[in-house]
Length: 371
Image (cartoon, rainbow, N blue to C red; front, side, top):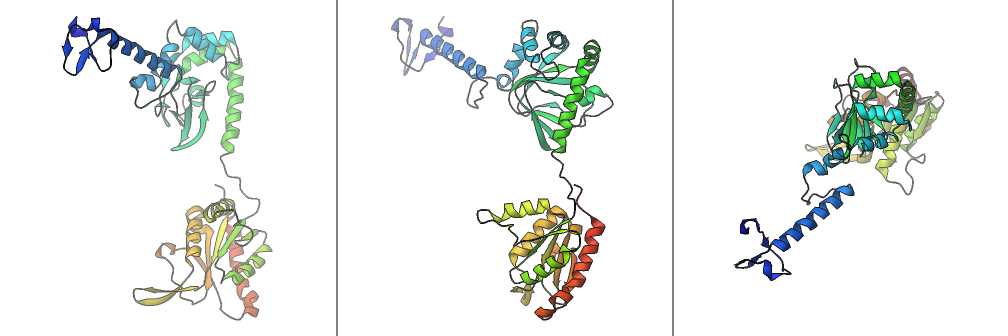
């Protein structure tokens, strides 16, 4: 009997349960059993609430959805499977259809970080999510989310020759029903309405996917950046290009709002633009390797780099004075560069016109962004 007793860390209500004593600790069966019952009640409370605690004593299976599976397993869980399926998009309250799917499917755990489906896989099962949430990931990027009532894996289930088009990863503990493709085909022959529901859901998801695709501009949008010192040249260039069937925005045209931060404003401008033009001049004097050289303002170089990273070299154009010997960062080599003749301010229009003409030809040749 004593071998089953546990050491008591707290006071005991009944000293008669102490068959012997140990220095600093008392051995107490009543207190130990009471602690076990309290621990069990606490664990059930965590599971019932769907919670997760890294410091709890529950097993990984409970934390990752294993307990959910038991609720939907076997004959005892059949009623729960049917009840959950009645809310599914493909079932829409059809009791007989829900029963057919419940009989032909099996519950699987939806684990946090665990994959139900892996992109480029060859399996063809269809999954109904009964509890929890799952992320839809394409090429490493999450593009959508699915939850109770949704299904995943329909493309490969409809056409077994197709590879999986996305990875489906659990975002919260839950359970899904796995329906093999042959069973889906058999059920659909008895309940042909499921084909129409699959088609409608596919159309909705196609619209969702289209929302992720950037719409091409009706006409090219060109964004011009410059320092304050080169603003006159940038303004003249904007004036020349505006007549060339393109929309031209200068950085001073309300791009940077008073309550906004510069980088988010630039990111919005980049996303909206098809081309970027950086007008630079020898605004600053620097000493590099004991040689004094002219260089553009740091912010113009930074902004030019942002546009190059998003739009690529073909869509980023540099405009500078001819023979100015302006020092640029080595990373900017290879960019399309156009030069204009230095001269008096009253001749700027004629000096910029050839540059504007070359830019117009380049923009027409490359066209608007399609991605």
